[in-house]
Amino acid sequence: MSSRSPQPEMLVRRPVDGQRLLEQVADQDAGANILFVGTTRRTTGSELTVGLDYEAHEPMAAAALERLKVEAIERFALTSCAIEHRLGWVPAGEASIAVALSSPHRREAFAAVEWLMERIKAEVPIWKCEAGEHGSREWAHPGDMRGVAAGPAATGGPS
Image (cartoon, rainbow, N blue to C red):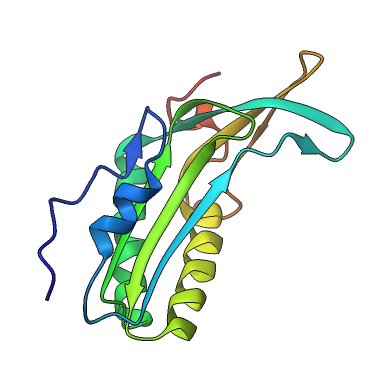
């Protein structure tokens, strides 16, 4: 078994450190160590994106991320898993989220990353406001909030 440092915070207001997360989950018993980094796209449709402004219902978002991490470890027999999602302003080209995990086998590791990203986008109360090149701003939010009203204003976020 590897010796691991304490788990980093899942919600951060600084650049995402994927390498630190990968080191966090590294395990000599794992045949697969994967790092997925989701970045802010510069182009969405025909609009150029300057960046994204992320807001969250932080206690609920942290709890949901922890729940999904635990579920992924159990569901895919992972050795370890770490998630870090950035809040606040994220310029185009920078990382918004990183998911690192280790698993005895690659097939389960790749499936776990895809499953986690789909669940995070659908269930975690984190919203993004896309800032366009010409000053446009548009909020997006998770599709399935399990009883939470959609949009940041409904949970105390920006109005």
